[in-house]
Amino acid sequence: MSEKDDLEWLDALAGRKQNSPAAAEGREFRAAFLERTQPSAPEVPEQDAVREMDLIVRAAREGLLPDTSQLKETLVIRLEGHAVDVGDLQDNPFAQRFSWRCAFRGSGARAMGAAVLACAVLALGWHMRPTAAPEEVFRASPAGVVRIQAADPRALKKQIIEELQAAGVHAQGYQQLGADGIDADLPQPLSQEVHSVLQRHGIPVPRDGVLRVEFAAPGGH
Amino acid sequence: MTELRYGDNNIHMSIDEGSLDQHAFMRACREGGRAIEQALRLLDRAFFAVLYRESFRIVRDAEGARDIVQETFIKVWQRCATFKGDSELLPWMRAILRRGVLDRLRRPDHETPLETGGAMSAATERRIAELSEAQVPTPVDGVRAQELADCFQRCWERFERDHPSHAAVIAWIVEDELSNEQISELLDRTPGATREFISQCRKRARVYFAEWYTLAFGVAASA
Image (cartoon, rainbow over all chains, first blue to last red; front, side):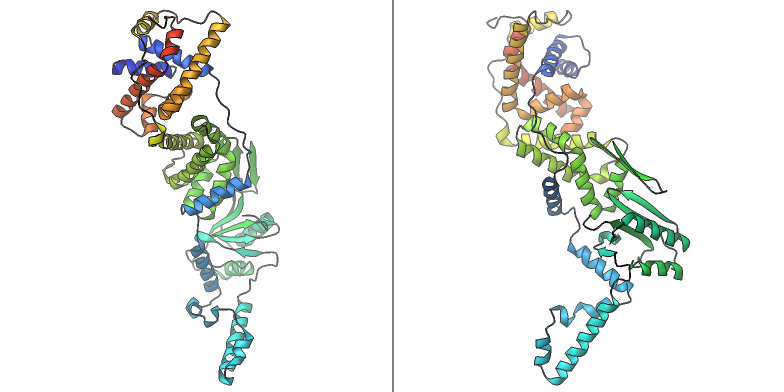
């Protein structure tokens, strides 16, 4: 068996014509192989939620998917969009669940201080509430993409695009991988009209001027 | 084929059995984050069945085949930046799957040493040489055809059991008519190492299919 023979055998095996003893060997083998009965694989459904989740979990284990640290980054971006100094909140002594019983257990001065702080936290929460329409709900937005959950995602997408365009922004909609979204480069500095559109829908101003919003129906991904 | 079009921007995506828009794939690769999760789901729906069938055919184990396909999808995303978009996704993914199959088959417990006995007889080799320029003998009746087919099947099953990676490569050569260069790429080896591998495939086939060659080329087994 020489190298030349082997290559002629390979060519014949792959259906390429050759005329040699080695090719005859390969040709017959190929014909017999193609005629043989092959075992059939068990049927699998095209869509299998358990199988998909298994894949997602595996991908997360491999580090392919965003982790919760990106969720934290998104919340920071939102807070800054509402002119809140994130540094003030980093060591929030009320990070633990507030308890009225604890607040009044201390001395009068401490109790008063606790009550004032509690009021401040409540006021801050009120100030931070989303100003978007009731049907719009924000979710985590990794990698700078703002996600909005809406009863009618496409209608909302169309509305925001129209409002941005009216404010002079060249906004484009897209549909990809099951998600409706908007891409837009915002003018720098931001005009009042554009700022109003974003504020009206509770969309934080992107630091880099690149607006990316994705829409989903409740319960969608 | 399902085609989705939205609004005046006319962004659309085509979902077909065994195909996914490569531009959407590349965009998801660039975006990362949640786009990957959605893309993984879509990959599973579009390609799991076809890749699973291919994987099962070689490894013959449902759990193992499923594992290899999932591993393939993970590798697809880990290497998505290397996909140039100048071809369909399926052939690229199939190549990744096949390398995964070979890696699994090459584990030490999967291969048995080459048997030195039972090689093709000299008489059979002479007969093959005689017939190389003449018409290839075809079975004259159904009984002989069935006998040959059964013999080939037996030989193949033994060969596949003892040398699964060589059997897998031979199967892919026949089915996809691979060239030496394509085999080299599949094995991720140099052309020289690939030629050596092909030589081993042929040598092993001659040992395991000696009985069949003898029957097919009309030479008595004792010759």
